[in-house]
Image 1 (cartoon, helix red, strand yellow):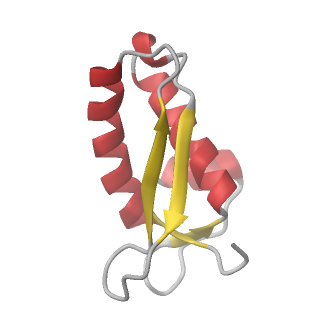
Image 2 (cartoon, one colour):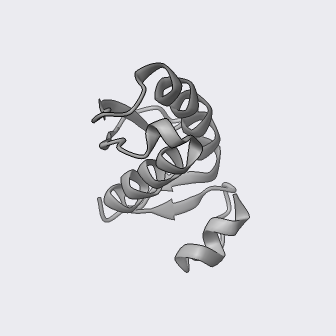
Image 3 (cartoon, one colour):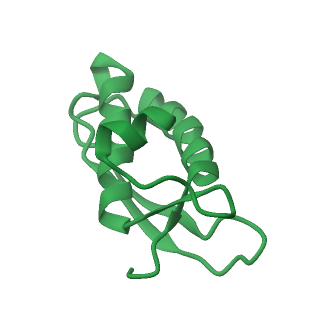
Length: 96
């Protein structure tokens, strides 16, 4: 996902290897990736991200999904892959 750093002008990762990102920006990034995953997901509405207390694991999770008119099965499959990958790449910034 290093292309995201260039595409969205994000700073390089921190010492834990994950890049800080705001919750709104992360929600928008995940939504855009899902919309581009398949033609049937172009109407995907978005995700809701909440922080979670996990000192040795990811510190955020997707708590809500707005499917819109997208194919639910395809969107869920794409979202499962994207969420795992994004959790390894990003952590919520301290300002959230």
